[in-house]
Amino acid sequence: MSEQNFPNRVVQRFVETVSVELGPDQFHAMLAISKLPAGWAKPESFSKTDLVESAKVYAVLQSAVRTYYGRGARGVLIRVGERLWNHLLEDAAIGGKAQAAVIKRLPLATRRKSTLELLGKFIGTHPGDISVHSQDLDLLFADHASPNADGQSASAPICYVTQGMIRESLFWATGQRHDVEETSCKAMGEEACEFSIISGK
Image (cartoon, rainbow, N blue to C red):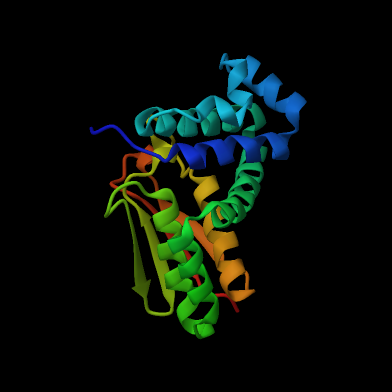
């Protein structure tokens, strides 16, 4: 299996967002219980992390949240993903900001796929990492790299952060809430982490 890659700028924002969601005390407690470095609570610790190490950190921290919060982890990580989308927009390069501006001017019916493709550019590192497919009135977001699941094994889907980013990106684009369900996950042995997006009512 090839090593996963992930942008370190996204990992830094992820760490910052987890810290805000959990609060500094809970974040440090989680790191201690998980036997992870205390320095991981500081986003700047990852300013020079390479793509491979960034992917590992991204997966390990999500695993730590799932262990620490149990069933409550799903809601925590979805909220982290929702906040993270807004940070990705803020941090986007000129090309990304221009694409976001164009999307907001598109007819409502065509914004969803374009928005998910933009999200794919934000979190992917190679062409083909992420693909978006139309399914009648619905969409499928396929993450073929999925650093969330790097080194993970689970009996149910675990990519809640991506789920949150998808939900918030679509709300940003359309002002409508969408049902987003992860239907397959690499942590379960699948080829890709796939998310089914049902059009907002």
